[in-house]
Image (cartoon, rainbow, N blue to C red):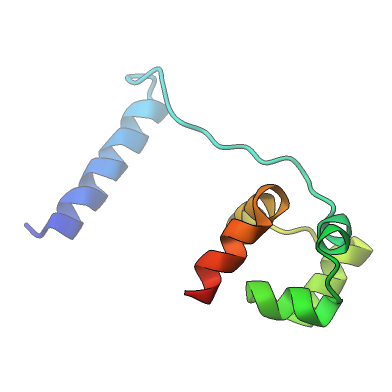
Length: 95
């Protein structure tokens, strides 16, 4: 078995064990809704600048700011990190 397969197998077994109450603890990350426009405004960036800096399409950014859509999954994680540590994210992306 490859290490990748072993890792996937272990993760699946942990998920099955947790769902059948064999494991009582699990790390669950929950993110509260965020105000994308406020984050962008605090950084003093235009929509184009913000979208370009963080790899988001301008169209998607506009939908988030209007409230037509909400960020989900990795985008929500990224935006939460940007809200808390924008300089760190910008520095990491510049490397």
